[in-house]
Amino acid sequence: MTQPQADRPSQIALVDLLDRLLGTGVVLAGDIVISLSGVDLVQIRLQALISTIRSDMVEPR
Image (tube, rainbow, N blue to C red; front, side, top):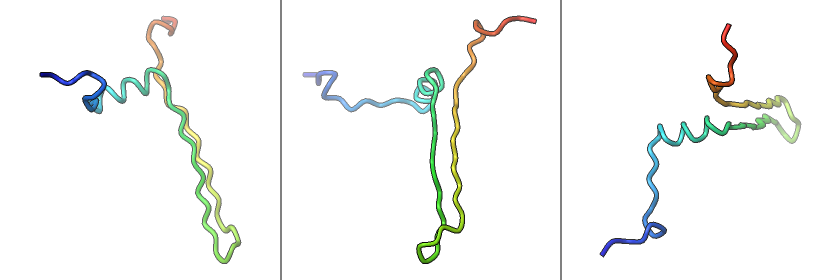
């Protein structure tokens, strides 16, 4: 007897996962704060938008 689809753990290849993420776009954001005795010494903010450019959207030259 086979298991129903909902009971099986889903396995996604890394390439498929990247394809899904880049197809819809990904926003990464993060903050890094280095402090000493409650005083912030360094604060770094990182923000990135990662997406693909579809070739049918780009006008030929």
